[in-house]
Length: 153
Image (cartoon, rainbow, N blue to C red; front, side, top):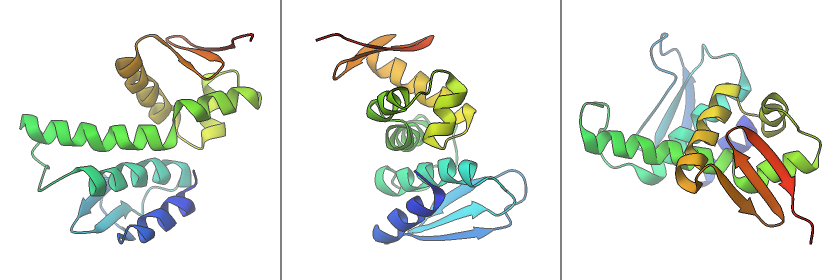
C-alpha cells in the first residue's frame, strides 16, 4: 500500500492526518482521532509504515500509552504494530510478490512498498504467530530463512 492510499483510509476512518516537525525523536503519534507524521521523514515508503501503525493505534489502542514501562501499554503498542504488519505484509501479499518474481527479502520489501526493517519485523511477527513455517493456499512459506514454495496439486 502506498502512503497516499493509507492517507485515504485514515480519512475514511474519520482520522485527520497531518505532517509536522516532530524533531528527531518521534516518527509518528496518534491522539484523539489525529495522526501526526514527522515531516522530516523524506521517504514515502517509511511514512507509509509509520502511518499504518498509527492507524493501528486508532483501531486498537485506548488511552495514553506513551509510558512503555507499563505492561498494558506495551501490549497495546504490540497490537497496533501487529495491525500494521498484517495490513502491509499479509501472507497473501508475500505469495503475490513471489508469483511476481520477488525472490529476496529486498525484492519483497520493494514489491510491498515497505522498508527492509519493517519487513523484517513483520516476518518476525508472522513467525511468532504461525511458527517457522506456514501454508497459504497452495504455498508453503518458510519464515526463517524466508523461502516460498508452491505445492503441486
